Image 1 (cartoon, one colour):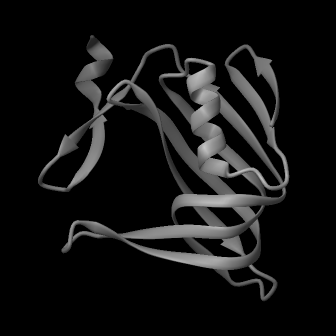
Image 2: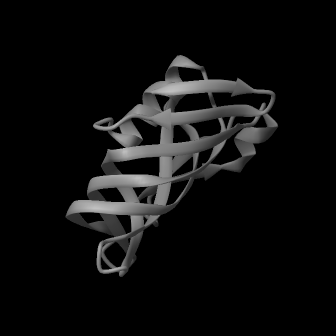
Length: 144
């Protein structure tokens, strides 16, 4: 990964072969980022995507092999149990120009992934919600 620091965050360029979510999580930990917005584009392979089934209260996961244009990477970084947590969604397109989208569990950089990371000064944590079965933003933490 290559990065430049900005006044309000970072420019990031992930290199071929790097895992997207793992790399962002590691970077957030190294830079002590506790809240950020994520926006990115590029090309990935082996995208593991999810769709949250509200009835079962769990993700349906599917891995898509092959190379895909990363049309949009959108998400955020917050804290779970004091550690950075990357929550990201993607839209990708294959050689047939058909799009796929969903929650991004992981993908490997195929060519490059360029990310704008906007860092916020106030930490946001997540708290487990048993009704949904997910860690959701605990916005009252912004007042702490």
